[in-house]
Amino acid sequence: MMMRFDGRVAIVTGAGGGLGREHALALAKRGAKVVVNDLGGARDGSGGSATAAESVVAEIVAAGGEAIANAASVTDFAAVEAMVGAAIAKWGQVDILVNNAGVLRDKTFAKMDLDDFRFVMDVHLMGAVHCTKAVWDIMRERNYGRIVMTTSSSGLYGNFGQSNYGAAKMALVGLMQTLSIEGAKNDIRVNCLAPTAHTRMTEDLGARLPLELLGPDTVSPGLLHLVSEDAPNRCILTAGAGGFERAYVTITQGIRAVGDDAPEQVAARFAEISDRTGEIVPEMGAAQGMIELTKAQQALG
Image 1 (tube, one colour):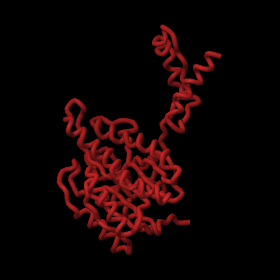
Image 2 (cartoon, rainbow, N blue to C red):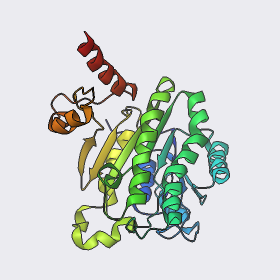
Image 3 (cartoon, rainbow, N blue to C red):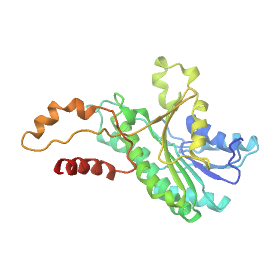
């Protein structure tokens, strides 16, 4: 059965081009009403124009769909609240939020200005926080919501010259982990998408990537599942070139080391600590403490 979004209202940030545009078009094609948000700025976040968002809205309307454009900066909570208010005024609800807006200001950490670090954190992390906060109570009241944070392999695994971007993208995983727990009782499912796609954000890598295989359209099918009625919860889905994988934050079984020589024990047995045999994906942060306390209790008796 084809996945449909009839009767659903979606907000997609950074949807004037690239991945966001593809997400918005894909949702609209399957029946969703879409708020196409895009500041219309340059890749580094400078400037701004509603033209990009309006162009995507025109595409959606021409194909028989419903959409409205919005040029709010996700860094401006009042503007984000107004965007959500416009969606409510137009359609009476918000069911889906895709936090896709982002910027790049790549430099090595040694050469990076703190303003560039702070700005990237502000757009990616606080931008997602603002948008999520603005829809959270609406979703709680309706006992339904689907939220996706756009993370990145740069956050999950690191990438040279992207300490600011990587920190922001991994922070979104932490945000997702907790919100997926807090939202569960109201059927608000929160997930992360880590895309690999050729967009304006990755154009500098072009010579090293088979660009013809990395269209944004190869990622959006995963996004659609993450915001569907049958969506998982607390998932990190990686996607690109038609490939879909799942990333996990795991913990090993480890060892227990106490006493004056505990540092030496940790050093001597570090391979054992690192052994992934029997590793688990904790249901929540308290699981780490339980593993450690269990070792202590077993040792005592």
